[in-house]
Length: 261
Image (cartoon, rainbow, N blue to C red; front, side, top):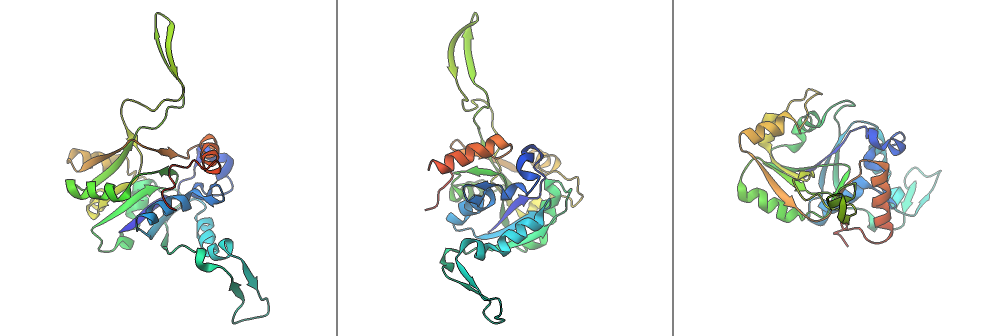
């Protein structure tokens, strides 16, 4: 199965970083968040990726084209035409197959997915997620759940921590205070989708096609969208504050999304 990752948005709420690079390349530790996402899927055996590029997409291409040099020590022979670069520890390279697709600067999410249809080929299903969200979702169990219900689409639903402290009171007297509790009611879209190829019947290549609007709404009407509840770790990198939080977790060795060794 292929893993489609949406990497084309402008990330305007993380302008401190995205003014200079696309959000998927914003680092957590020494590696970009995109690498962390890909490592999650790779851990479960899914190593065939399709990146939907847009804003500053050339930087993502360039990063992976130079990945071997970035990850390894090497010797550069400026005068040699046959063995110009000699890598010394290339065993650190990931065994990934990555397809880079320019899906447009201003395309919305549904349009981006529609534009990679040919790269899905004849596959009956595929994964899809965002290039700015991390979780310790068990991908194997997610796929098993998708196969069990047999519907067109599965969305991973999460309950993120609130950004604000929760106060319980009576007659203006505070009974309890819980700083940044997990949202107790309702779920939100956490990404980590599984789709049958029938999804493409609900999409359009028009730039204004938003996956989370009419396509998913129509799947709901047809009772073809199921929810996989994930109650453990999930965190998006939507703002600079989120970026700082994820880096602090990684640097302290407390990164729940690191399911790989």
